[in-house]
Length: 347
Image (cartoon, rainbow, N blue to C red):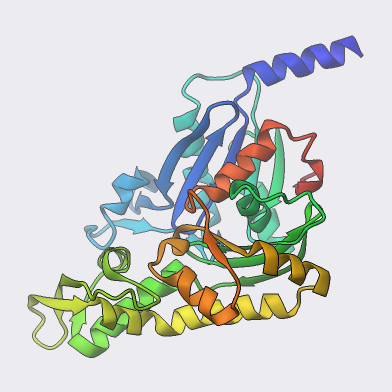
C-alpha cells in the first residue's frame, strides 16, 4: 500500500499530465499545474518529395494557399474529427514535445476532448493518434462537458445547464446535468462553413475569388449575425473571376450578414431541436439560468442576440469562449479521481 502511494506520488511529481483540445481550426494544450501552454492552428505543411514536416501551426498557416509545387499545407482535422490520421499523429507529437521541453522518464496522462456525436471508429482513431505520442493513460471527455466546465457551469449539480460550443468544424449543443449529457445535438456546421459561405458569396456577387484566410479575416472584422446599428465596410483583395487579374473591392457588414444567414439559421435550428428534446424539469432550469455560449463561433457579433430573440431565453457568452474546452479539460485533469464520472477512460 505504501509503495503504491509512493510510486503514484513520484509519477505525479515527474510527469507533465496534459489536456488537449484537438480542434478543426486550432489545437490548445493545458499542462497540469501550469495552465494553457500552447495555442496553435491545426495546420501542417508537408514536403511530398521527402515525406517530412516543413512547418507546423502558425508557420504552416502562413503557407495556406501559397505553397510551391511539392509542398502542401493541410488541415488534418475535418468537422471536429481526424481526416488524416498520420498527419494528426505527427502534429500532436510535435505539439506535446513543444510544451514538454525536458525529457521526462514518466510518460504523461492525456485527456483529449471529442465531439458528442463522435462514432466508435472516430474515437478509436483519436485514441490511436494520442497513443503514438507515448501517453501513459488516455482519457476521452465530451466537448460539451469540457466547455460547460470551462464556462464555470455546475455540471455535477442536478440542475440543467445548456451549452452551445461553436468551433471550427462542429457546433455542439448539449443540456448537461448530474455529470452527464441529458441530450445533445452535434451539427457539423460551424466556423469553417461560415468561411465557405463568405467565399461563395463574394465569388457569386462580386466575381472575385478569395482564399480561406481572407474569408476568415472578413468574418472576424465585419461579420455579424444580427443588425448592430452601424454598417462597417472593408477592402477585400482577390482574383477577378473573368479577367484573372488581382483586384480590390469593398464589402459591407450587411452583405456579409446576408452571406452568413443560411449557416447561422442552421445553428439556430440545431438549438431549437435540442430545446425540444429537453425534459420539462431541465427546460425550467434553462429558463432561469439561460444558455451559455463557448467556442470561437460565439464571438460572431450579434449571434447571442439572435439566439436570444429566436428562443426568448437569456443568452450569455462565456468569459474566454475560445479557451473554454481546454480550460474545462484542465479542471478535470487537475483532479481526475474527483471528476471520474465526467470522463471515458480508454482501455
